[in-house]
Amino acid sequence: MDVQEGKEKFIESWGKMGGDWGINRAMAQVHALLMIAPEPLTADQIKDELKISTGNTSMNLRALMDWGLVYKQLKSGERKEYYYAEKDIWKVVCQIIINRKKRELEPLLKVLDEVAAVKGDSPDAESFSTTVNDIRKLTHKANQTLDALVKADSNWFTGTFLKMIR
Amino acid sequence: MDVQEGKEKFIESWGKMGGDWGINRAMAQVHALLMIAPEPLTADQIKDELKISTGNTSMNLRALMDWGLVYKQLKSGERKEYYYAEKDIWKVVCQIIINRKKRELEPLLKVLDEVAAVKGDSPDAESFSTTVNDIRKLTHKANQTLDALVKADSNWFTGTFLKMIR
DNA sequence: CTGAATTTTCAGAGATTCTTGAAACAAATT
DNA sequence: AATTTGTTTCAAGAATCTCTGAAAATTCAG
Image: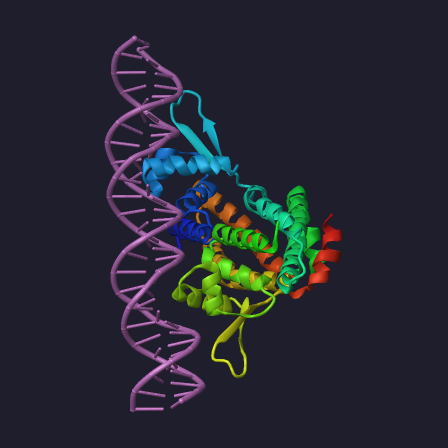
């Protein structure tokens, strides 16, 4: 396999995974391309490489910057803007955790807390309350775990942590 | 808040979360409904409660059974089939991990391993190789961590594990 | 200020995914 | 075997999500 072929496979695969995880394919592909690029790229280069439109490129670059996964670089004497991705994969994971936690986990937790307060003495109320409380407790734990993970550094995860859980 | 209102909020919220995670809303809602039901329900009851069609109900029940999150129960003397959900939330999480790992993480790992073998001496090849290998290593670690988590039991996670990482 | 280069926005087109409901199928009952 | 009850399948339509490309906005040079 040559480099070009490898790049294509990687971009395709990363894009596919994005799709499975509720992130749109183009966004994941732009991210993949920038992660493996040796130098920052212009929107134009990205557009050509991935064969997507200018608009799509622009929108997904904006989204990636909002997620804190891609940065803009201005080169002096040049009009064009260059983009580059965070390459420290541990930081990438942390950014994604931070974002999804805020967007999804925290709103869910809020609802679970509200809903766990429900009282009643029917079998329905009983079963509801038990299940919701179990989910609520585990979700809170998961939330704490993710907080701890994000605070930790990469070596801790790949070293200490992994040894502990085995 | 009364029980009915609580149920509705929970089902809506769980369905919403499913959507964010690449699972369709109806499937997540059927799951939510069964998790909080005190007794197994028939397809008909689910259909009425969630106001979805028979076909939709049937297909999503099948999918939930394939994921190992819902079981079928036959009551003697009754024609109708009853469905109930796994209520141990830790088991639910494990089932989801097992399924998604197989469907998504493992294929990605395969591609990463293939692609990490790429050789070349251009800056492109260099950058590609470094990044892909970093991702590959972390993905393998994540895979191992998930294996360990699934083998562990609930108490270990909520007790020991959580203490360790703090 | 004018004009060229570049980026952003967004309405409509296109693609994908989800839902419906009717028909086929299955299983038990008469 | 015909009927009744219940379940599954699937084609067509609906809903949702994504992409395009042209127009508007922005930026900078002269």
